[in-house]
Amino acid sequence: MTQAIDRPSAKFKPTFTKLVSKEGSAEYPLKAIHICEETFAPLEVAYDYDAIREQVSRESIAKGPNSIWRYKAFLPVESENPIDVGTGMTPLVKSNRLARRLGLKNLYIKNDAVNMPTLSFKDRVVSVALTRARELGFTTVSCASTGNLANSTAAIAAHAGLDCCVFIPSDLEAGKVLGTLIYNPTVMAVKGNYDQVNRLCCEVGNTYGWGFVNINLRPYYSEGSKTLGFEVAEQLGWKLPDHIVAPLASGSLFTKIHKGFQEFVKVGLVDDKPVRFSGAQAEGCSPIAQAFKEGRDFVIPVKPNTIAKSIAIGNPADGMYALDLARKTNGNIESVNDAEIIEGMKLLAETEGIFTETAGGTTIAVLKKLVEAGKIDPEETTVVYITGNGLKTQEAVQGYISEPFLIEPKLDSFERALDRSRTLERLEWQQVSV
Image (cartoon, rainbow, N blue to C red):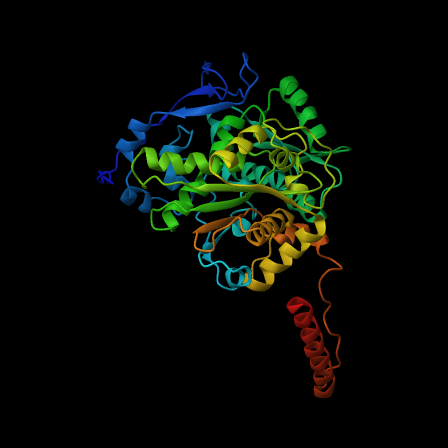
C-alpha cells in the first residue's frame, strides 16, 4: 500500500460536495433536507475523496485532537472550530476473560459506554449534527429519541448555546429522562412508541423550522457514526477487523461503520480486505432480523415490546441497507429475548468490568449466540460495539443480580456472611458448569 505523505498543516477546506439519493442519481444542495423527492429514499453526503487524500495521512490524523474531530476532513462540516466536547477516541479493549468464556482468540470491545459527554455513541452523531445546524443558521435544535439521543442533543446544545426541545416516549427509563432534564431543555414526553414520536417530530419540524438532528439534519448527523469505523481501524494499527458485531435500531450505525472502513480504503489509509458485518436486535423489536431470517429484501414494521428501548425502532429507516450489507459481507443478523439481553449485560460486566445498557446486552447475547452456532471463526479479529452505559438502564437488571450482605460491625458477622457468599459462588459455578 502506498501511504500518503505528511504535509504541512494548512487552512481546513471542507470536502463534502452535495447530497445524493441512496436510490437513483438525484443530487441536492447541502441544505437541511433528508429525503429524495423522486424516490423518497434517504439522502447521503457525498465527498471529494481526492481533496481528502490531499489533506490527510496517518501522521496528520494522529496529530489531531483526541476526539472525533481528528477525522474532520471526512465529516460534513465547514467550520474551522466544530463543536468539540471531547467526543470519541473511546477504548478498544482487547478482551481476555469474555473471549475465553466464548472460545474466541481475537475479540475486541469498542466501548462507547464511556463516551463523552453523555456515555453513548450518540455523542458522535450529535456533535456533527449540531455543528452543521449552527452552520446552517438554526438556533433551535431537536430530536425524536429513545433516550440516548435526547441526552446527547440536550447536553451538546447546552454547550453550544442552542435552544433545545426534545421528544421522547413517555415510558423511558428514569435514568435517561433525568439524563436529559439536567441540561434544562424542553422535554416532550409523548404517549406513544418511538415511531409515533418520530411522526410527530416530522410535523413539528415542518411547522416550526427547527433543526431536527435525526430528521432534516439526518444526512449530516448519520455521518458521525463513521468515526466508530475510523477509530477501530486506527486502534487496530491501521488495519480493518475481520468481523464486527453491532446493534441494529434504524440500521444507520451499521451501514456507516462500513462506510467509514471503505473511506479509509479509498484514500489509502488502510489496505482493503473483506469485513463481515453481523447485527443484533431484540426479539421484541426485530424487523430487520426477521427479514434476514426469512430471506426477504424488505422490512415489515413491527410494534416494539422489549426492555431494549434504545434500539426499539419498529420501522427502521435504513433496515433494507443493513440487510443488504449483512448478506453481501457474509454476515448475520440475529435476535435475542429479554432474558438473554439481561444475561448479556451481566456476562460483559462480570468478565470485562463493563456495565452496558440493554442495547449492549443485546449485542453481547447475539455475539454469544453466533459463536455457539459456529458463525464466528475463533481466529477472526472480531470487534463488538458497545454503544451505551448501563447506568442509564438500571431497571433492566434489578431483581436479577445479587443483593449486598447486611452485617453488623463485628468480625464474626462478617465471617458468617463470607461463608454464605462462598456457598452461593459454588452453587452458581455448578450451574454454569452444567
